Length: 334
Length: 171
Image (cartoon, rainbow over all chains, first blue to last red; front, side, top):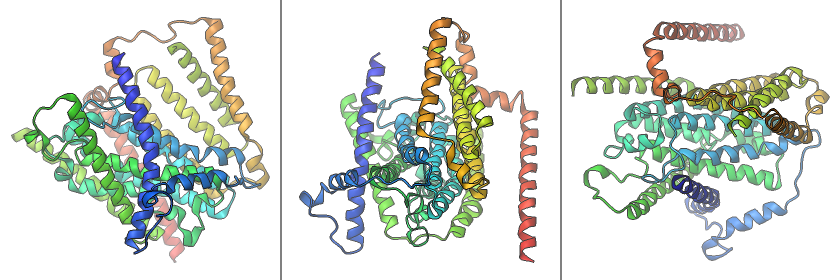
């Protein structure tokens, strides 16, 4: 019973933090974009413009909610909820600290991949239900892109699973107490990060909403809070992707080589340290996502597909095979 | 509770399966298929086959039906008015509420207990990834390898067909 209560408390806090992290990420994106482009950015609402996200949301709520007359109203309404839903249920298996997780299931990694694969529906159905050419093209691009990049992502995660010899996310983090996976498996890290960018539909892979070609892509016909939901989901997916990169490759809540030098601590202090380390790493990757967006231009669509199928997938499979062989030899001879 | 969940998922699977066949709009059929796959995954979960449940979602709901939708949207097989006529928010809500209530009624009136068998610890262990991997690479190694060859042949065949079209377009 105590365990269940603890899980529920962790769930409540992490859901609250995740929802708010989207607002923080929006503010960070606008400020960092402004910094990179030598502008000031939002600085009028509250100190340093910190209340800007609240003002944005208020504005979105007050806007008129338009549904295309010839569109499919029901799907048009449901579609924005799906990406938010998939983003929220992802955190169920992510460990935030030693013993601080909602649940530890035996197939945690597969669960994460399954949830990520369901994320396609929101964008695709939004594009279709709008009954507009731009939206439909955006939705189709999204479906093709996300399916293509799920493969290298899955194979990269499989190479991580080899080190932990378990599909439980908690055990994957435990296996990185001394050596982070970014050191043991750098190629896997690069492949996973690139695929995570594509899955989150962020630049340089944001062809789904390429302004120059598709007006607004899949959300051309969306306004008011329905558009707000897509906005929220996009930033939550950025945060989730950062959490996954941290969990799989940067040792989760472990400090570098923590197993070698970190002394025993009381559970409370260890918990505080773990969560702080996890949040710091996640924060860095959110910054990285924003940094890349304002630095690197968008790919062409054929380049995107070529990169996914001809470069990333063979590389990921090669990486997987080499690592599997290396681990086999290591276990055989040492 | 478990019996109720079983009834709910079973009825949802049946209802959505009927919808897949009877629905006139192909997109709605595909969506019903997604829910069908998810409810089957729920049934697997009730039988403590967690690996199978997650793979069901990952492969069928996450990849195959997305491809179905992709093809349907790309080809846009239907006439305009047919596309949006059938499906409304009310119908969908009524469908799910109906399933929930029907399951509840059956649960209350039938007073079934023990629809699902008792699970021994050994049986639960069979549903884990480790057990399935063990079996797959020892007892069922030959069928596994043969399936792999079959899939490779299918992929090569698909590539051949795609390549041929590409060449004839170039000429």
